[in-house]
Image 1 (cartoon, rainbow, N blue to C red):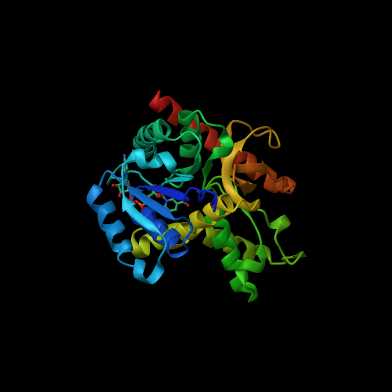
Image 2: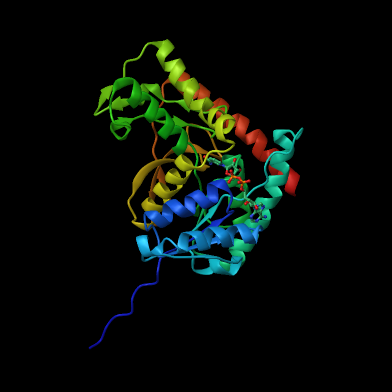
Length: 313
Ligand code: NAD
């Protein structure tokens, strides 16, 4: 009997086995998002510990191989998730941190592309929009295959808060945060709806939900030192859209070219995501005031992108 060869197992490489990386690997593992998950970190013992710990759960999960590996293991990866980075040192400015993370990401992406030319790089390290641009430039790949987690997490927080306010499952809330994953991000209230019905809130309620969305990361970091669970689920969601060729609309960070006049900047906007990465950008058609905020966010990002590109050249 002639049996066709089994297709290659799906592989996801997670670079950086810190709080975000290990929680992401565990989420991918529990959801069996790929048959192979490899963790890569300069802290080799941490990656090894995580890989062993997860592997010991295989009798309860099954069907996923997890190991601590090297950059050469990126060779067969369909998706390489980058969560590695330096943490802020006491007294260090955000700009200094950006300079250090920019050169770390440049080195990591050089390692990835030395072994893999066909995968998709999914960036999570902050500042994610700036570093996604830098990763794209360093890779030499088409921008569709270098994606940032963008405002997917922020939009999830926004939908959760709106759903809470209205007593509706957040999965039924269609609402977007766009722009920078950070302080200049903005809510697109003009398009927010539940099954097509516009959301009517007072301007105070809107401002409060927006502020809570923006402050969420600070609040969680203040409480437990880092954020991990929701970002891990957001990264898993993007992996699902890619690996199952879903053509799902997700607010990821992508290179914008002449998007309402915004060009040569990565920022979070609704994108159709499938097997080839970002297939296209959806124009949300923001209101005039929202559009002005989006342009301001893009301008702020462009300045930081230019600074980071200079810092590593
Ligand atoms: P962490 O300090 O716990 O982990 C970082 C890991 O990176 C460490 O294990 C470290 O050893 C590793 N690392 C450092 N340099 C490396 C290198 N050159 N090669 C390989 N590994 C290296 O930090 P964390 O809490 O996991 O956060 C990681 C990043 O994710 C941060 O930049 C954080 O701001 C970001 N983050 C992004 C989002 C988002 O929505 N995009 C959400 C949460 C956190």
